[in-house]
Image 1 (tube, protein in one colour):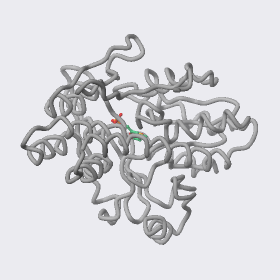
Image 2: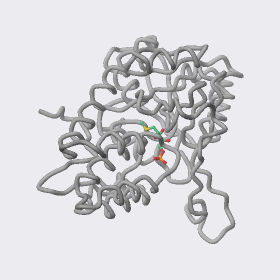
Image 3: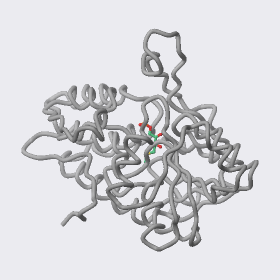
Length: 316
Ligand code: MRU
């Protein structure tokens, strides 16, 4: 029985994947019905579904809709967004499965379990009265589960360790203003929205106790790719002595990417920034491991030296 405040961005029903259209939230709760891998690929590229784990799960369901040409469908889905490693990881998990749909459903529920576990571990680092800042959206909408950074906030709130959340609006697509605020409202967690450029002033005034963000890909050395604007937050947090946490499942950790320099950074259409102007629209940035206080995963809390901690977690 889903909790009353639970949010499910993906459902597979009657031979189709239903995608809660995140492009129009919170103004409308409308669903896109996908019956082919191409329709799922379109939902991922256009960001009707977004967030690293959620696009992986969507792609896995997308493969369950493929006919004879499963490899062609995998190629199409893989090419949709380059930065989040969960996408290729989830495709690899289902590609050779005897029952693709059953394996996709399993990945979906495994994501839920991983979120719950890492959220509990992360929340234990919080102290009563904490005011936490987050960027973009790494809640249930982004994982098809409970949420990574959003799950940590939720668990900290449930444990009485969180006073309120500062939500970066997250230009240009406003995942913070539209999606994180929607989730926090539904969960009854107090928050205030801020412009992305306010974080420094808030930290300088002692109004931020922790920063917690999600990740799209974590390199083997602990460098973290996440929504553009994450790196400057980490620099500010270090300057002001504020702990900077990353929350992510192990499926976001890419042992095959040695460091952040090797992570492909998606460049999206300039029109998303301001229509008609020659904008550079980098969707992600890389935070060096040295600025990360801890990484919360379902396999434990990882701390520096990250290379060793990550290798040990992946081995487990
Ligand atoms: O471009 P988006 O909205 O897909 O970017 C999402 C993020 O950067 C999230 O922080 C990340 O995917 C983690 S989601 C649990």
